Amino acid sequence: MSHAALRYCPDLHHYQRRQTRVCQVGPVGIGGDNPVRVQSMLTSDTRDTESCVREALELAAAGCEIVRVTAQTRVIAENLQHIRDGLRAAGCQVPLVADIHFKPDAAMEAVKWVEKVRVNPGNYADKKKFAVKEYTDEEYAAEVAYMEAQFVPLVEECKRLGRAMRIGTNHGSLSDRIMNRWGDTPLGMVESALEFARIARARDFHNFLFSMKASNPKVMIEAYRLLVARLGELGGDWNYPIHLGVTEAGDGEDGRIKSAIGIGSLLADGIGDTIRVSLTEDAIHEIPVARALVASVTGAMQASAGTSVTPPPAAGYDAFSYRRRASEKLVIQDVEVGGGATVAVFAPQSHWEALGHKLDKLGDYKPEMVFETSGALELDPRDAAAVAAVNAGAAARLVTVADGTPLHPIHAYRLLAAKLDERHPILLKDRFAPAAAAGDFTDNLLAAATPLGSLLCDGIGDAVLVRSEPAPGQSLRLAYNILQAAGVRIFKTDYVACPSCGRTLFNLQQTTQKIRAATGHLKGVRIAVMGCIVNGPGEMADADFGYVGGAPGKINLYVGKTAVKFNIPEEEAVERLVDLIREHGRWFDAPAGA
Image (cartoon, rainbow, N blue to C red; front, side, top):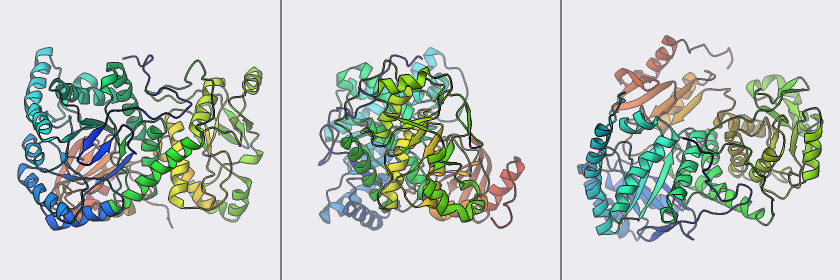
């Protein structure tokens, strides 16, 4: 399918929030003129009313506006009544959302007690056996008819009771039917969701929104853009709100950076009406990050909103399919920049001087170029004469946006990439002035990761300079972690870890830390840590190895999406994972002293 004519945003160089209808979730409106809503999910067992009520009250007190809770079976869903009653008795009106996978009867029970139901089209009454087969048109239509018969009663009940719905597709958990026709692709994710939306609309039910979540920020960004573009094609009354999230962002800095790249990039284009930052930490820690991310993006966009830009004739990048911008390779201070070379990490002279005494001890976090002596040509991309002069030159130049340019970095570098000949490599800055003061580290992380990660995921950028974080060591670490999260420079083990929820069959946080301790030196290996089968073989996407809860206290190990070891006692599972990595030739011992 050609994406050439698709548009996901009215102006790539000027912020404008996408206009949507309102989805009403109890007392909370999503979309329209409402602020971007922040939500999270309970980690407590849904059968434990007291713990669920306590955790939901804590989340609401921290600023969480919508609380999701898993409902694996009809019997478990029955307890949502008691959780709701406990919250309302405590004077808390925060809406509840039932998270449904696999079980239509659980959804029919849950809808009685909660303000919203989330369904995943990939596993709601649809086959998911990782089967490879060719579907005839008749077989395809028969499965669609079966799925529709299972889904219509929920639509009718939501309509009758005034409930909301999220049609939430996850990369990697698409049905076999969708997989075999569309592949495990952003297009498959979109088509899966649209099937369900058409059924809802045919019954005049419109109180729903969409999500397109993935653990890979590139895939996630492309899927949401494609969804919004397709909704625009379908017509003005397909203006449903959007929920944003990176499926298994992980924990610590990595989880926050992945979320900033995926969610922040889309918010910066005016897409997104409610968000959840999914961290493999206690849910309470998600709320300040989510609130800070919304404030960071909307604040930065509004600060540069008054600057007008004459749009170039072409975008300068493919918004729906990743391709790194094809520049010429330059060698500067013995460092290769552009031309497909590894994206380089620049640092200001002051950071080099501060770190000079321990450069040999920084390992993979070394600065590679002094910005001030790199010869990077700084210009305002709105200055047509300056850009034309660079393009007229015989030699390729390293180009960056000049300090003081009154554009948001995302808009500025898009404009530069569109106007500058591709042969010239581009140095990305996260801001157009050095940070004046230290500030809060999370705020600095979000301010750096959103523009740099967004641009890198669009194939723009051959080197990066982080300035939002003034501390030299932390600034360097941030630069490398942003490159890793954007998938453009893998220099350490990559972890995909889902957040805890009531389905989780082991302690995710402790287990993730144990796995990190055992495997953290395996550069370039991607390991998924999943609490249950819902976040199992499908949603760990492109991981090399997987550690998945199979039953209480029992672990299944995967190679790719194939389960190869079953029902391993939890206390043995990390060691068995190491053995599995050895068997497949990906293991090496940690360096001495590491």
